[in-house]
Length: 32
Image (cartoon, rainbow, N blue to C red; front, side, top):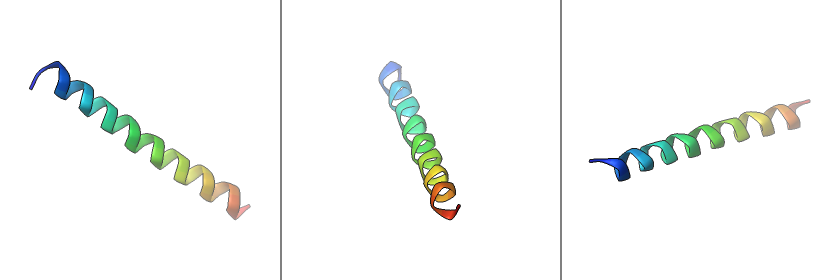
């Protein structure tokens, strides 16, 4: 626990959100 784990948690959340947004963006782009 501590600063390192919190930074890792934020990095994981950011990566997950980024992948989700990228997937939605690509799907919307190719479906049009």
